[in-house]
Length: 484
Image (cartoon, rainbow, N blue to C red; front, side, top):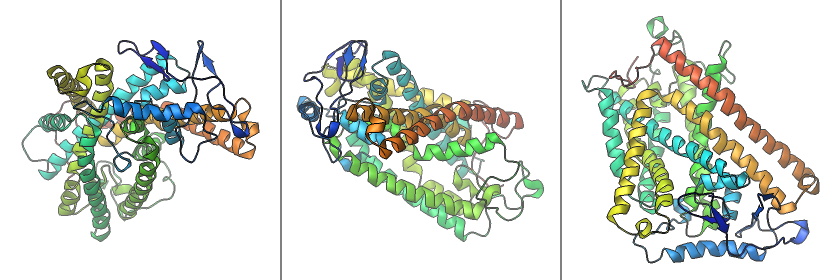
């Protein structure tokens, strides 16, 4: 849909003006209360909803804040309420832009708003949005199948494809709740067990004698599994561009989760509380993953470090115990992204009908049907790209390039122009210049990930198949993390 407009479910580009759109209002200090740029005769203000960043709140800002209250009020009599999340349950350009626009329902709405209301941007973002979520679901189907094979030491006698199918069915059932408020209870459990799992992995890596594959005769399949763990600050001599780029994309994926933020904000009772969740989650994420990754790498080195990192542990018991604590997360994260995709489609089919907010046979049947399709597609993805590292890299290059870099660099330029008008770079002095340069770099990084990163990932997938180091498409071969 074109943001700032109400649209029909049939075509998100058929718009009528929102109530309360007003004329140009210049704020104190030379700021501007809306985006002065026009597209096809339509004008969209970039207003704030309050908070410490507000600049001379205009009447239009109060109108934006009221829109959240109206949304809560409109669904107050529904059996199923969507705006129920508090800040503890939701998780900076992304934060600021989303808080200015509480009418945004998901990243597709946001994408169209960023790029001047063009409807093709909405549809293009929708395709990337759904593919990204489906690939993440597939990643968790794949990883859970790897977990089962790990526990069975690759000797269960059951085809790995069957494990993937079972995982998809279990995840489908867990995806059925229709609000994030319900899923947030599982999220708390998931976060706790993830923390325990990675903490154990770091501890076990430090106390065991040697990593998995230590001094394998002949160096193993790669020929590199020899000697003491080698820890490097820069890539080893001879590291290929494909290997280096894939490592960068794997790390990028860990820290980029902005694609779901608009969807979470859309369910918060008070979106202005969102920064609390964002800061809390980001700080914990950086500390935990940076420390754990560094510790595990320090003890397993360049030769023996694999993804998932549990496979780097040489002690079988340590490996299985730490991996087992990831079970809630392996299910929950796939379920979360399935729910986000299903809501995206469901809301646009049933917007304005009683099926959206009440328990009806039609509503629940459609919801279950949409989820079933996403999990079938996720199962196919898991079997077509059945290796963890390259699947991460592919998602990072194709989707995180936009949702983690390009979108938010663009958001910065749109907001600064809305705040300060034409010539905002010179008007803000050194701050304007630094902001301009840094966000141009952010956009260029995203473009580089999209082009060079996609090439490197596809080449890595081809190389792995040619080398025979991974099981084939829909193959029964076991892929557990076992002793080398």
